[in-house]
Length: 124
Image 1 (cartoon, helix red, strand yellow):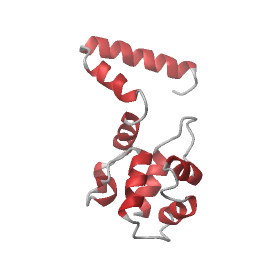
Image 2 (cartoon, rainbow, N blue to C red):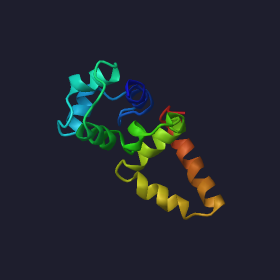
Image 3 (cartoon, rainbow, N blue to C red):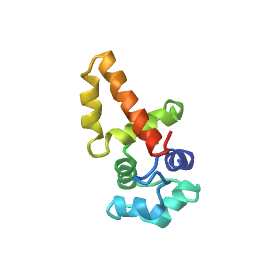
Image 4 (cartoon, helix red, strand yellow):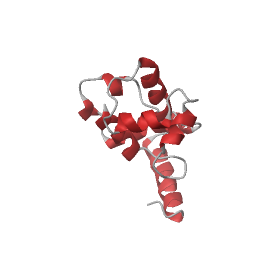
């Protein structure tokens, strides 16, 4: 469990591009899980969280509960985690669906535009 939670913190970022804090999780979960308890889970000092806590973490990080309970953690590479998290953020699912309806050339134009904006903001 600790390894999976640690991977979420190391992989996913807040809106400022920084690692989430334990307080972010507490606040973002409407206090369904406390910051100290998240720290204990991440560091292996707590081992058997309740289903309520797992659902809160799942909702906060934007990953399905299966991420925590499945046998095969290898399927959750960095790209998969970012994609699952990103699609649950406001507006991103709509953008992804809109782009998916474009032909290959249209998708390439959108991708080049995204690359350009990232470059302008120093996010390459």
